[in-house]
Image (cartoon, rainbow, N blue to C red):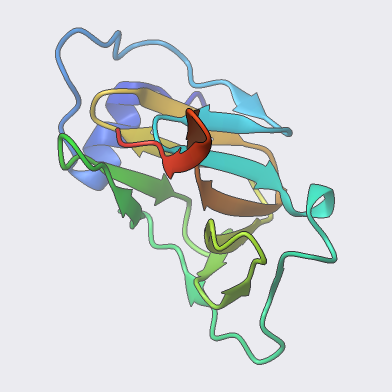
Length: 145
């Protein structure tokens, strides 16, 4: 099945901005990807320093998605979308940099949807969802999207 921005918007009930091409097929990537103030990193790139707690409660990601983060400036949500039974998510994470929002594990492609940025796909695997940061002179600050 071809997943498009329009099909993800319909599945989740989230409206995307009119300037985005809604009929485009969403690419699926198995590596690093960024979306505004989020970055998605394959878990294997960060282990052993980043990991889920041993007794972490995991939640199945429903077809309508789960909000990962609401953007700072526009208040638009970054939403993780998956077919039923193909992805689980936990926010109980150890991260020495304190940037991790959570970890998800997917057995099928899953999608990140944002009303302003559109969507991107993640190949099956385990990923860490983190806030992005940027340098501001000598200090680092979180990216505000």
